Length: 480
Image (cartoon, rainbow, N blue to C red):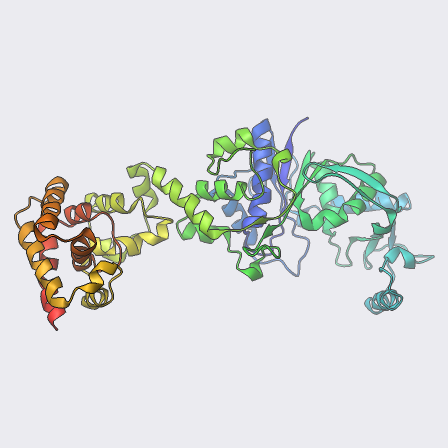
């Protein structure tokens, strides 16, 4: 089989992890088989369309490396790839249905439709439009909706994820094919587009599963061979009690990139929400995903979105980056104080915080003290309420004495990391104290931060003059 998959979002807003996962699964399937991955914009809901979101969707896919082979901006053999530019095709297929007696003009007003719905509700029956088919519908001239004349029957089909499924005739109804504004509905247009674009696999979210019997009925009426269908389960909120949506804080996927999440980390994380290869592996390169992905291993139940796990995955990818690559990726995330710093100083700071970074957006806060002395208020506050429990038991006079002795010892150092380690560890023994006291006091004095990278490396990166200067001013701060 020639594998051709597609991602067909509506340009009604940004793309969050749910949409990107659908696109990713389709992309992986195509890449694995050496097939094509197509982007198609389903822009027939003119009232909900948001200007600019088509380009935003294109940028989102490219940023994550999900490059498409055909699409609105690059064309392809089945162009155009915007449904709003394919209206002639939909009308031609609609005429075929009219001529075969499988479509008719809907003459009812919205008020009449609401009366039908209310009657069904009063009778405690499901509303089915086919129960109200007009006996002699008018000729369709485009001013009224065009409806599909269904042929209710039972269906059994295989879903590539959900397995063997079946339904009875009661779920099949006469749905709208083309609206009174001349634009097709999703239910009609996507079937035409998939057929004309030779799509082999349709991967979509669970919300469409209930409509599949209607689609099967339409495939038959159009005499179109249907593609393979694959339904992916919902991505759930962290509590697991409902589908994740924009109302629940689902972010624009590009916002994660702006916050410093690496595209390859996002791809690995999103792929493993609802899919695994049967092992305990949690981190995947793109190439591993291409090699190992299969629809058969997509789970049928919903997957919870866990941002803490995303941070863990992203931190892993950050730690794996070579120093020069990390420095390149870090551009735009430095604190303003680093603007005047040279590259070697920034690289030294970056190397010290690399192990602690969960996302690049943390870089500014974690490295600020490398480029500017900490504020007096921050130092005072941390000595008044130190994070290190052992330091809490010391009064100010004792802390001042510790810092003065540390300053005297460090003044003799050449500030290589080895010499700093030897001298400060020796001072621990001489003063009979602990790292949680001595090292914590030095860290607060020179960084003004509740936590910092390894102390010897930090002092080395700051340099002798800067480190001693910062230590010199702290006794006076603590006395006031």
